[in-house]
Amino acid sequence: QVQLVESGGGLVQAEGSLRLSCAASGRSFRLYAMGWFRQAPGKLREFVAAITWSGGTTFYTDSVKDQFAISRDYTKNTVYLQMNNLKPEDTAVYYCAAVLKPYSDYELRPYDYDSWGQGTQVTVSS
Image 1: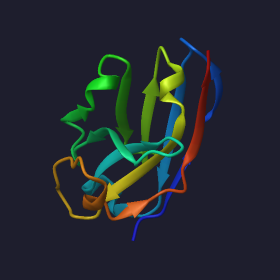
Image 2 (image 1 turned 90 degrees about the horizontal axis):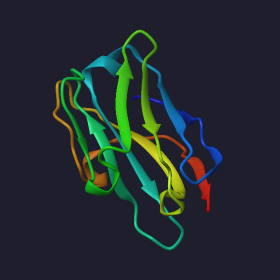
Image 3 (image 1 turned 45 degrees about the vertical axis):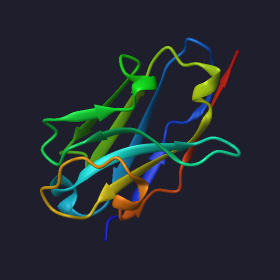
Image 4 (image 1 turned 180 degrees about the horizontal axis):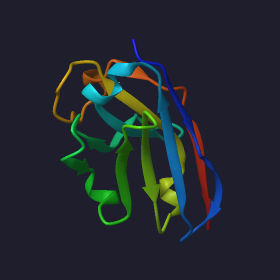
């Protein structure tokens, strides 16, 4: 099992930036695809971004393309979500998640992910 802990959320003004971090336990982190999801009040959890186990391929939901960037650091067992030009509609709890199937490609659906962090709140003021 992989334990995931998110950090880096907070309150930011519109057009500002934040970088979320997701620290993973376990030596197998490098084998797993990782993703970021978000959930706004009263809404379903939605896919934001994902990265393959190798880090060679990333994928984003259309609304955050050219705005967010996902990356991973194998030496720190950490995946990041750099968020730029934030908008009030980006306000949500952000979760990172892992696909516990070695050498997997990225996945887009929450139920394809096996391990989740506790979430970090991002609030964007107008």
